[in-house]
Image (tube, rainbow, N blue to C red):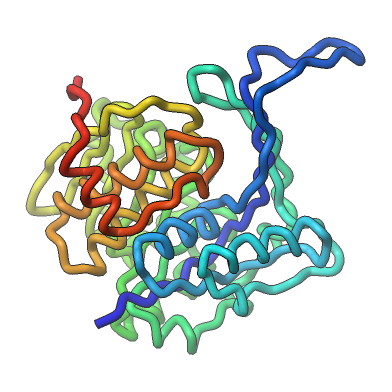
Length: 313
């Protein structure tokens, strides 16, 4: 059966600049090697890599009725993502970020939330979601757990596999804000800092188990160069990251989510799904932007089989 995914939530237009070691003072200027732009966000960025890996992807959310929105939707379509479910808002700009990329691949961000904050459960295409095999909600904290549950719970009741990734830094208040949606999630795909800050746990495994205890079926946590940790009620295991030259870490979390969820859709065991997630992240990290890399599922699997992994601390 074909994996059909609706990615719903954050759609962001990213502008990346590299390398940046400092912002020039006053009216100063600095020459850089590269400036580019592309689709990003926990819905749009995940959609791009899912489409590369062979899933049939429709994305839903809100962007402005502005030139940035035009470009964002055109770039998504170029990657094979169906954007017909994306709403256009006339009174607010498309969400956008400017990312100065440091020489080590890390980056701060200048961000406008924009139209992402206007999306409500009543905007969601519930009938189209019910016909999909998978719903991925990117950034449920933008609407809160009660509203997110109004999208996730009916999808799960219809037999749709549900997942979510987070945008915001975590703290216990965010966990309380999200809690009504957690029992409607088959998979939660946060990063390490988010898990520790959300739960206040002493260890990552303890924090992930706390989220499973609140109703999440599986927590797959990204750990940067240390790979991923996957926790369910039945098992806990770590998967290493691949040893690659890192140009930009933008979108690596979204790429992991896409690879992991594509593995789930293919019926792969959780460990193999996490390996595919780490492979997708490793491919994206080697260039600028969430949409870096001309790869498909076969190429990602070949990469995973042939590329050395990093030692896990």
